[in-house]
Length: 264
Image (cartoon, rainbow, N blue to C red):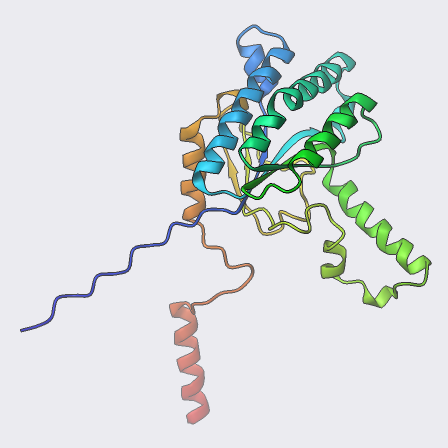
């Protein structure tokens, strides 16, 4: 009597350690409803709360949000002012709750163009939550990926200038150690909302091997269903990091033919 076929092991569901999100579509969301741009940005804050909750529930350890790029300063002055006000309001309302939930808050990007009061809020958020270990929320403000890489190169150039480093010692690993978030796992999944399919100078170095997910949903409408779709898409990806563990049928055939020729 033949034995029953072996049951295959259940597939392990992979959860990204680090999700990065380009939150796009606030203005279009507002315009489609006959509202002002500021209303769209305020609605976007509600999605931030929801997505952070979903990430915590899913076991995601790091969430990085592209809140304000170094190029966004070129937007109309009234919009920039409204964004800074909204950012300040978010910190006032959310930091203590984030701290209570064990979330560590960090910021990446320049800080020399923010007001003193906003800088103090950012510093307070970081210092209050510095020892939290449940998860990390990274907010990218006045951030650009090219500037991030240039800043890392500048730091290495200064070390060479001071005689502490030889040019031939510089490699990708050393440069990467000076890039923002070098102490955290690299992004596994990068999500962009609102249908655009580009990363707009966001985490250029860090996202070298990230999986991309582009959603047509405008950021204020980004829901649990949208996040589940992104996570489901991620679970279907084959992340090889340049490697290939299996040989294709054609390659196997070619290898057999080569051995036959060698033996003849």
